Length: 292
Image (tube, rainbow, N blue to C red; front, side):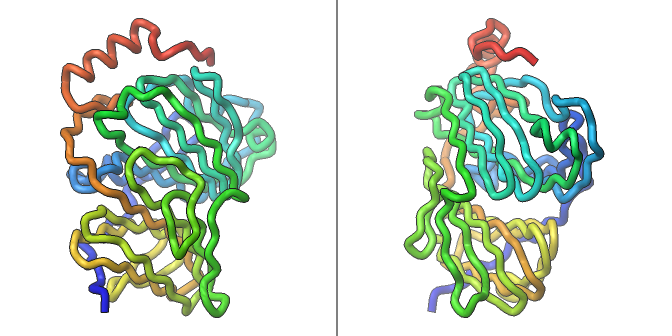
């Protein structure tokens, strides 16, 4: 029988903070030291637990124009609608179940904010954002934008009507996700009914974590609940999830990038010299233009 991967730690959600005036998030990587080094290729995980926003006429409630270089941002909406525009001419709206996968690459400016109609009527926002590192060979790739709709996701129904796994990136039981990635990554969105189970085969070489989006579950013998982040050791080949209540959980797994990581705010490169070049290129306007 395949050995279960032991859990290294279960991290509780840190106190939320505001990003701009529109996103109230808990930043696990900022709160727990060493996660960037430990969980390559993942650089950041900001979880926006359900929060009700009042109606507003501010149609830019969110985050104004800001730069990125050297990595990708991945935004998943569970509830609410988020709009995006960037200096490469991309734009769009993601709603429940949709994913925005933006490759900053050589450099981009973008802004993220509540979609206009959602802002006017107000409502519940529930989402997360993940940052994924790029290998050195791809850090200066041309910016790219993938608008992945809920209808495009791979789907696997669990036996005996126990639930469903949506495949956003990578593969699960023959279903593939629509996301194109630079390094092998799996992003699986599992909804499991109380009493149900699901197992994932995840090689020991891959760094793996599970975010409990809703409900209570056990991972092997370890309990976790809403907003907990479970980090797995790099031994064993299998992760088993058992739902104690109705559960939604996100599994992330990826092959580590064995390269130095030097981060300065929104720039993630391999050397300090490359960071200085990123700052200079941004200040010189080489990331393009984006009006607020």
